[in-house]
Length: 101
Image (cartoon, rainbow, N blue to C red; front, side, top):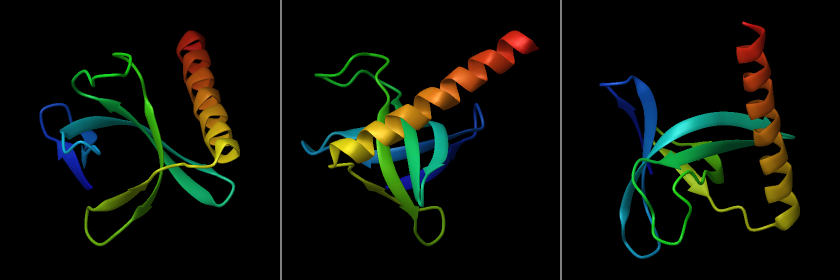
């Protein structure tokens, strides 16, 4: 996986290859820790067959050399729930901050 900065909007993006070989560019929505692991929330830039248009992908990740990162599929249901809950809390905090401004 390659982490690239989208120069037009200056939003970080990640390029990934799906299991069927499809190349997919995703915006990085959030990077957040849960316990001692790092997670990333990605939003595809184009519709992905079999997924809702606004569906966010959650992965565990680790940084490699340079701008590269390794996305790690979350296989454990408990771990996925913990990451999803933490992401939901981030969204709730952001919404609250927008209302407070």
